[in-house]
Image (cartoon, rainbow, N blue to C red; front, top):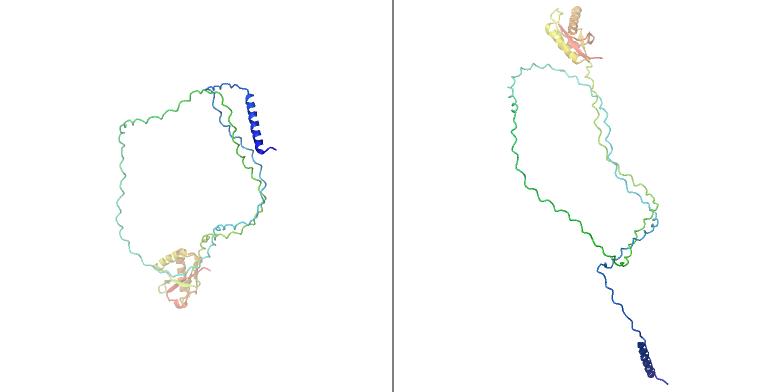
Amino acid sequence: MRTPLSLAAIAVIAVGCSSQAAEESVVPTTTSPPVMTSSLVGPAGPTGPTGATGAQGPVGSTGAAGYGATGASGAAGVAGPAGPVGAAGPAGAPGEVVVGIRGPVGPAGPTGAQGTSGATGVQGAGYIGATGATGPAGPVGPQGPTGAVGTQGAALVGPAGSMGSQGAVGAQGTQGLTGTTGTSLAGSTGALGAAGSPGEQGQIGQIGPQGPVGLVNAWTSYRSFNFGSGQANVNLFDAKQSSEISTYMARNPSLRLGIDSNGQQGNQDLEARRVAAVRDSLIQAGIPAYKIESGAIGDPLLRRDQQVNLLLISAR
C-alpha cells in the first residue's frame, strides 16, 4: 500500500520530466527592428468632442386641477366727485326805510403837495472797442496710439494625428415642457371695498336776487311849502326845494308824492290855488304828474295855516 508521502514524490519527478521536454521543443523566433517615427508626424489627436446633447425629454403630464379660493376684499373706493353747486340763495329781505339827514357843506380842500422829482434820464449810448490780437499757437498734441498687430505668418500643417479617444457622454437633454395647466375654479368675489371719502363740498350758490326796495306803507311827512298871508305863489326857496324833491324821486322811482289839501279851513279857493301851485312847481321840476296825488291824506295834528304839507308813500 502506497503512502501519501510516496505519491507526492512520484508527482514531483513527473513534473520535472515534462518541463525538460518542453524546453527542447521550443523554436527560436526573430524580432523586427523598431520603426523610426518621422518628426513631421503630428502627436496623437485630442480627445474627441463631447457627444451631442441628448433628445429632449417628453412633455410632462397634465397638472392637477387648481383649487378655488375666495378673493381678497376690494380696495377702498376713490373719493366721490365734488358735490353740485349749491342752490341760489333766497331773495334778500326788503330794504329798510331810513330818514336821511342833510349833511353840511364840506370846507375847501387844502393845497396839494408839491409834485415829485422827474425820473432819471436814459443811459447814454456806448461804443464797442476794437478786436483784440490773435492768441499764441496751442502746445503739441499727444503721441498717437500704437499701431495694430501684424497678420500671422503662414502655417506648415503636419499630417493628421491618430484618432482621439471617444468623447465624454453628452449632457442630459433639457427637461420636457411643462404639462398643460389643470382647470381652475374661480374663487368667489371679494367683499365690497369701503366707500370712498365724501367728495368736496360744492361751490357756494349764487347770491340771491336783491330784495325789493323798502316799503312806505302809509303816508309819511316829507316836506312843507310855506305861503304868505293870502298868497298862492311858490317862493324862490320852495322852488329850489322842488328841484331837490325831483332828484330824490328820480333816485327812488317806487315812491309817490301826496299833497295834503285840507289844511286851510274857511277859504277853499285859496287852498285849491296853493295846492295847484305846489303841483305845478313839482311838475316843472321834472316829476311826472301821475306820481302826484292830492287830498286829505295828512295828519290833522301836523297841519298849519299858511302851509301845504307834502307826503310820501310807496307806489301801490
